[in-house]
Image (cartoon, rainbow, N blue to C red; front, side):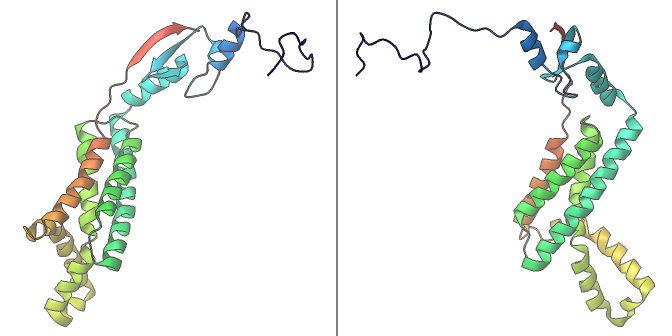
Length: 222
């Protein structure tokens, strides 16, 4: 226990509760930066909050331009990104289905997430029913297309050597792909769980592309 009569040791730092240190206005301004470009907001007189994020005026204008830009370009970009993601998801789903013989629910959900994120990024976060429908169709198509090799195999077994003709094989693949879109429902009620799993993946893609309003508040003084 310390003796109150003992003088303080000058080598040890002392605590002072009767004084306080405040950061200067200049240092606080330097700490404030634009969320998008990372530039200090002190370079301008004001800033905005875009979707809850601090942004300088150029970045705020850029965010508005992204949402209000060419609708055709956004649609094509979202379709392209979603299609690439769908092909990757189809390969993943088929690989798991071929190796295990089962529809793994987590893979269907993963396909929905991959496609949903790709469509959302391609549309530049526009969202809305158009991109929700796109994400749902691509997700469902990605999952059911993984059934095509198995359907083709069954058709070839039933048709015999005639189906080995290259032209005939193209026709068989086309028929199998069309048939695959109805295949999950043909096994009902035994395939009820499988349809439910696919529904979860489609729902995830739909949810990721809901329209989120671009809320802009400001300007605020720095």
